[in-house]
Length: 449
Image (cartoon, rainbow, N blue to C red; front, side):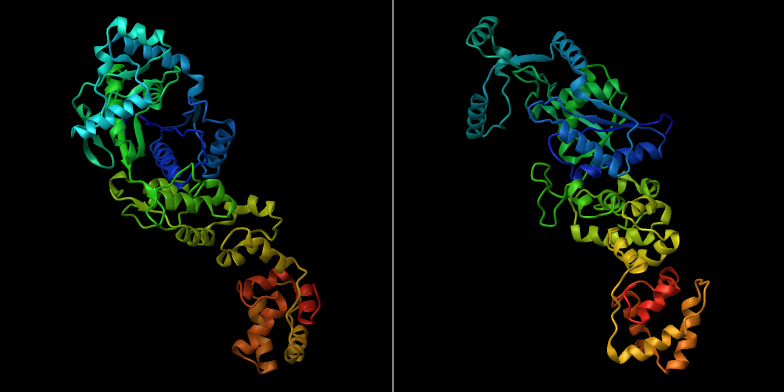
């Protein structure tokens, strides 16, 4: 790619991000970084009635949790002068015109067209209004919304996901770009920002395909370069229901609080609904290397929370200690790399590591049944002397097995119960050096240590 790409993720701070939003954010950020480009986080916050600072902060936290550090952060609410200028230019070009219909009148118009077998699109009645008629409406207190006059042509582009795409804008209503109260709609602000910020690629959900035909006309009217578009399939619930910020489906905050790994969320969000295998990844760089827009399916992609939980566990089983060291410390877990290697294969959530650290660090209540008391006393007497290394357990077992006459489960199970208080868990070869000789001896004697 000759010119470094510029991509953006433009959420509205009107609710919590869900995994479908994460899919879009990840495609944009990872593609930009892989190609040496720029990733912009841009808040679509011109709807002041629905946008909130709390949701904006929640979005920032979610984006950070995914591991995405934007190269640039923008707020559309701070760029109103740019939109004012764009509106003035479109008016001067004759591409914006005032319309005075109320929502009730527009709905009646749509119903009338449906009854006549016509598409329920705006009939451009406002273009026929005389100056006197407009003045009369305004004298009644009506304020216009402003519509962009479409060319009514076939708008075609080469979509990075879907191939050749076309939208016949003659089949669409002229879009409203400015509301009656003077506030701007995303259709306008997105175009203005993409032009001014040099956005080269727009990657978003397939529900925006029609919007792209409209926005290309607006871009061209404003004299801007048309970016490359890519419209990925949407994630849905296992039931087939679409995801919703309003309903809180699979919000990133909830997944974080449930202990899901951000890297697992990222991998499943990116790879689900593609021809690529859904599997653990070592990091975001490895995930970025997998992105191929031509391998994204055209069908909706089902996001299964049960599959996410399994992928979280599998991700933990592969993570190096360096990737989790800070989080383990925050959980009060010690033991370093040796402990992590010993327990990671038994974790479903990172928080489970704290349970195993308590097993190592103590105290624990050893599970000692009377019939094993003599055997465990013998096992304590045969514990190797310190220092202990990674082979202390095999050496111990090699001495204990012939001395006790035990083998198999009769040998190993009582030792695990006494040393950990658990029926199963990580390999004792890895745990015993971490427990240490003193605590091991006390637990074999049935003491809380």
